[in-house]
Image (cartoon, rainbow, N blue to C red; front, side, top):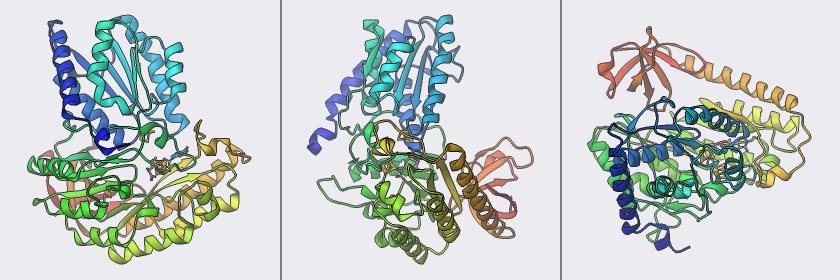
Length: 470
Ligand code: SAH
Ligand code: SF4
Ligand code: F3S
């Protein structure tokens, strides 16, 4: 598809703004503020999308609530990555029938990655008749028009066409923190890992223009944001589709030139496209955090090939070595899938041996969940769930021990942290993050939120560090 068709023309966004104005006028007729509830599942991309939806809702005159019984509009932004995520959403949506009974004018919207799947939309259409609007991530920018359709046509609206995907600039946004912000640098995924639903629901890879990204980051830094996370399913594919070719390392370098006291993090970086240029750029950019999330998925080259990941165990380990050579203090994290179809116990233990070798600071671990429509879902899967659970527990035991050891090594050290919020614990009221992204529970008062501080680490456990201000 032509790039000019991917970036939406300003006229298309202005048309949506017109719908927003009409909706605001309709909402004013209520005589009280219209309340919206936005409920978000899934990854940071969805969190960022929800902040855009909230931006649109705010411009429609809405305030926000967490109470479904107080809401006039409910938006459920869903995730399709594993069956459990979907089950949870069906449960939540099922419960909303009671809120709808109490308030028949309630408008219920289901969006996000689940909504983009025809089978899910079909199930909502037939069995969840209290849902008024269903739209996929590819139609997010059209939310005002779709909602207006629900109000004026008094019909249920479904917008789930697979449209390759576009880039909408200039959508309003409600940032939920004054300290941390998300910036999408690209959308979609072209990797088609054999187990993964994302390429089917998020459309093809498309990169935002660097000038738009730089303008957004500059604005955030000027507004006082201290931690900016660049988002993409594979940030290392950034720029491949741009007219003026530029890769992710080049983009990092450009962003790093923006003056100010802030940190840049990013996720996710696919190992097949991560290399020396990226690691050396990270090392040379003072604003770029010493943190790398480099999902390996498996430690078995046979399984990696079946997953269509594009690297072997050895190639992955070589990248880790390169990253550590460029940044000896790098904090490394990863994602792991246990129980891919046909994985043997021996292969699962190769994953355990890989994590013992790498010694990640932390892991996100999952048991394989078949996703209808993906190639892996058609493979024979002889291992029993109980057997996979045993392998999974062994992996967790190893990682918990490693995280505990790495965290213990911080005790007695003084580290620079960004205080980012409260954590509801009287003994350790503040939460903060190290340069490498490790969580530090801190003593101190909330006037420190949004500031950098020096913390002396006094204690640790598997998941976090504990510290005092110096
Ligand atoms: N784009 C990112 C991953 C996004 S999904 C990347 O490639 O690194 C986040 C994680 O969910 C994946 O890394 C994978 O570990 C897990 N995941 C994806 N599909 C899954 C499935 N079908 N079953 C179990 N875990 C899955
Ligand atoms: Fe899914 Fe692979 Fe794309 Fe990540 S890179 S979103 S795991 S297909
Ligand atoms: Fe889930 Fe969609 Fe993210 S499937 S993990 S919300 S891209």
